[in-house]
Amino acid sequence: MLLKAVYEPGGNADRPVTYTRSLTFVLTHDCPWHCGYCGFRTDQEGLLNEARLEELLAEAEAGGAKEALLISGERPDSLPHIRRELHERGFADFWEFANHVADRCGEVGLFPHGNFGRMTESELLRVRPHFISMGMMLESVNDNLRLAPEKKAAGRMAGLEAAGRAKVPFTSGILVGWGESQSSRLDSLAALAEVHSRHGHLQEILIQRYVPNRTNRTNRANRTNPSLS
Image 1 (cartoon, helix red, strand yellow):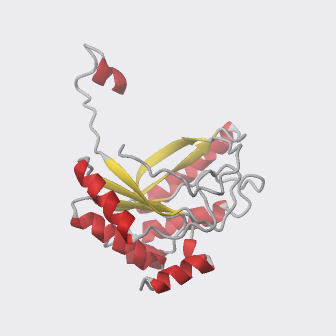
Image 2 (tube, rainbow, N blue to C red):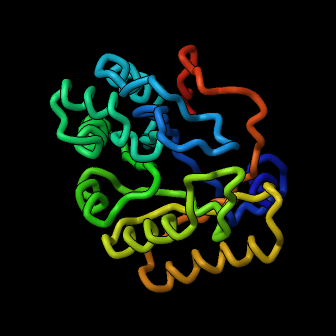
């Protein structure tokens, strides 16, 4: 129906479709976890440098972007080389660096949204003044040790609860197509509905398709940066 409203004469004109242009800022691809479906993570890339940050900000302004999506591997400063780089660049920890990037986005008129995986309530309270919203996929209430050995549903739910207590507008969602049952999908959506009923902070629920990672993508030195979308 939404596509008809845009492309077909006589579509439902009472349901306008709007969008804002956005640009993705990858603070680092480095991640300590080893999810079998992930084509994002690297081991030794390091942090987004200041020169590239300024290039992305200029690209966003030139392209008319209004939103910035800031993402990273999960808990990157658990990695020694990331902690070392943060210290060398004068940041106390990864959250101080993330806030710095978010503030630079705000200075050029971008609305920053962050997705850094599970965060504690105290961490969410630290970033809340710098971001308009945050996000983390639940994926499933059922653990899958084969696909995601380090990722546990209990930890994801704890992160969603923490965001609710911190009163952070939040995006979450589920992963479908990895072999889960229909009842598992419904249980995962019900879990999101339940946490939202307590806190009222979930602004968006995504249904993300599982895409198997069939190639070794750990070396992404030649990775191209996401373009405006």
